[in-house]
Amino acid sequence: MRKKIVAGNWKMNKTAVEAFVLATEVAQLVKSDVPADVQVIMATPALYLTGVSQVVEGISNLAVAAQNCHEKASGAYTGEISAVQLASAAIPYVLIGHSERREYFSESNEQLALKVDAALANGITPIFCCGESLSLREGGNFLAFVADQLTASLFHLSAEEFGKVVIAYEPIWAIGTGLTASAGQAQEMHAHLRVHIAAKYGATIADDCSILYGGSCNAKNAQEIFAGPDVDGGLIGGASLIAADFITIAKSF
Image (cartoon, rainbow, N blue to C red; front, side, top):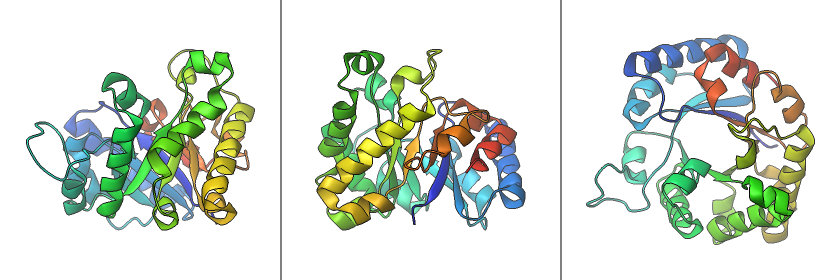
């Protein structure tokens, strides 16, 4: 049975004090309000990973994630963090290929494939992000484009390796633009990606793959979006910075 996951991406937000307060609030609410079968994740700035890890320690369905990792194990890459280093700090998840990393840091599908490999080699679960721009959506070729992102960055993996990956679909055109993807549009893409995965790895692996929705999901629309049979949770941006809203989303299944 697929895992239900709600992951909060804090992006470059919160001071050290604010991060501790938010993480503590989320931890308390997860313990009291969130069903045990929902995995809650906080993708914090790298600076706070070890501190937040201590806050969530002992809560079985609450974990932290890094927002990125480098594809190399070590070396002269100032400012970067490797999967080896994340693993040494017992960080269980890492976001790979977020739309902002692709756009602002020119990360290619080929580079992201190497990052996925690095994460898996170090026992870290990649949350692999994919999605299309407004021009691609309007051009009508968006389903094939997003499926091709999976092919380019993930389909070199063995079936066993792929089974350890979480997918997060981000309709880039619906993030911070004032436009909103409907629950039907989310389900359409998720179903298409599951069929695409099944064609490569078979129905069992496709059915077991958690696919999250990451397009302006919030406390008001999460329940409708999560009702889609192929939507297994969300990658949450702004709403993850408010503990009560984030927990409302985690309870929306």
